[in-house]
Length: 317
Image (cartoon, rainbow, N blue to C red; front, side, top):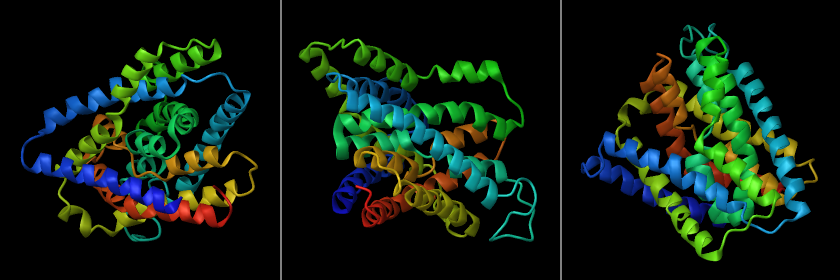
């Protein structure tokens, strides 16, 4: 499994490298990348999610989907607890910069909790486990959006905004989950021709997601990331400490290996692009969030296979 994961990630990162070159060669500018990102978020991702539900009813799938929702809740509760412990709020910044006030703790916590489980998680899990993996991933994604637009907003602003939270929960991905669940529950199976057309749209997910991520990285100065030791500390929390805490927990759960690995990989992905968006939206240091996004995205080509290998050693997968 580790070899397959490394192979799939390598393919994804070669496409990501193409995205960086496209940015540097001015083939994709900031506005163009924003439009490609919208295409991915508003069309391709929801289609991939919806198509994953186009399967004949199976009680095993329903049981595992319910478990996926519960695992998602467990994951985010653990991630928030770990980050609260390792990234103090407003006071001293902790292990690596004890003598300085940590003014960026909100960004750091957000980056450590919320992974890129959409842009990187969906294509990786789809390539590893197919529709069944994406089917289970929708449980994690739903919990992700619930926490992002509630806990995430409260973390950045210090207050809850119920109207904004409800509005933002009506995201295309959640709509894709709801429509897919409806069709699955009532066994509304679309004609093969329609499913084939939707699958063709969904097949754009991996190359498009990696091109968008690559173009985003191409707009960030790598030199500005290298000397900031704090970035590596946050990266270690996101890519290593949280996944290994989950491995310690998951090894005792008698669940489907595909379900456990899907959840683990989703929680092991690099920092989500949404963290930069949140930082800019709520008047925080967007450049710092972008730097953490860049470093974790580059490091995950090594850390995700390592996490999967560790999971295999303890009997997960």
